[in-house]
Length: 160
Image (cartoon, rainbow, N blue to C red; front, side):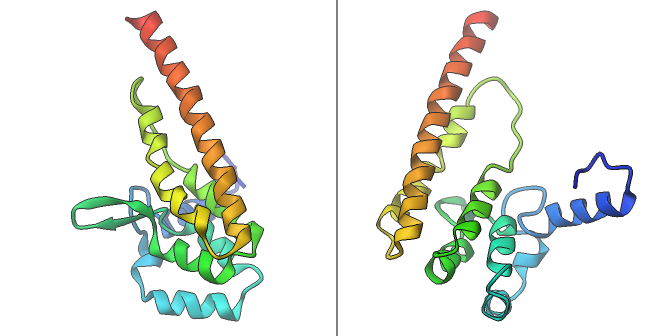
């Protein structure tokens, strides 16, 4: 499934999928502007697949009127509390975390580093599967920050 598909129905479904959850910007898409209790009830009704699907779609971060908070979205934290044993749910959220775009030469490492304070509270989560996921995510994000800092230094060196 990809956007470059000649299959228009497939491309439409992909576009719909990308817009439903987090939308094309930051925050919540239309699916997550409805009553969360309905989504939660549906997760309990369809526990095999729906928590993972919603983890892939849900807003990554919590937002307030003042902007983004240093916390994962309440919905994802609820998924961790209730379906944290599902490694595939956590893996889908990892994929969701990596879905963003960036342009510019500077500051990407700082953008990635903003994930660190969101991950750290999950290191003490009651569920050991969530804790292990958080440890791996923390290591991965730290290594990505180091890699991007190297890229930024290289770009600065060759471009001045």
